[in-house]
Length: 376
Image 1: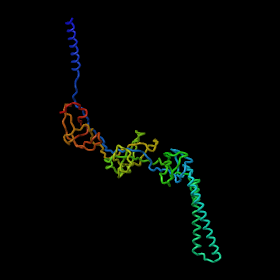
Image 2: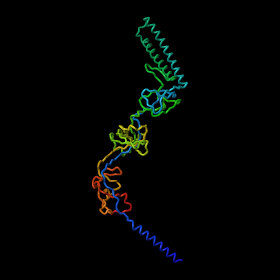
Image 3: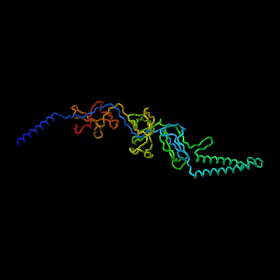
Image 4: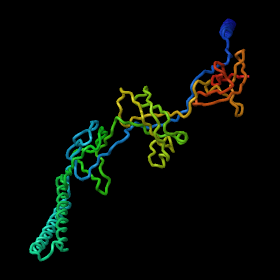
């Protein structure tokens, strides 16, 4: 029994060994070197800026009088023209302010009445030819009446503004209704009916009620690293990619490079650039089918250097002997290679220009695919 079991085991082992030998003998290990062909291409050195698409000019709407929001005539997104009524402010004076204004008016009226009486007395003397018309007290009295009259009008206008928000000054009409100073689109509305408003005349920061901007005139505002900023100058060509429309490539022109970093200016918003510099791009040609909104994120690529129709290879194909760049040229057997010195030009971090030492179509060893292969 043991003998039969031993014979069976030997047969199985022999069969397995024969199968393994047959399989492995049928495989051939390919030791040929992986190669890349040098090709004609374009290399661009670019600076990258990240930022947003915003209007060239935007106007913050604030009130010159304090009160509460009485009525809102237009909402976010609506188009308005200069002079269009936007918000009605209803004055909400304190009892003390109202009392002070009323008292000031009464005191001014009393002073006017006294000045008029003095002038009337002097006028009677002039009519009786007791004093001449150029008598100094008479001249001063006439001047005082005019001054007191102007003061009464000013106090009356002040009281009218406090009570109703409306007053007349000469041919002008003062109103508490805020109108649009420019043509544009209402970007945001920051108040609601019934909210209190702090005026621009207050010692506190005035309430910003809404913002208006011309959405037909848009620019890109972003930030670049200090290394890129050192090589930028206005007039450079720019390509923009908008986050909501990644398939659309938009062109523009670099119009501004900050002379001081955003960090020092206190306007740094992008932590990726610790010492970033602000840039602006205008003359942007947006496709007609794009619906623009203020604040769209965008990436700007600014061409610093460009090499057209040059011999290029991937940087991964390079090797170095000290500081000398080299490529490995495969020999005729396809298994061994020979190093060759090359002179490099512009690089974009992926492809590199070969100025000399390599011609179009020549093959070089792809070092990234070498694995554990030993290249002589």
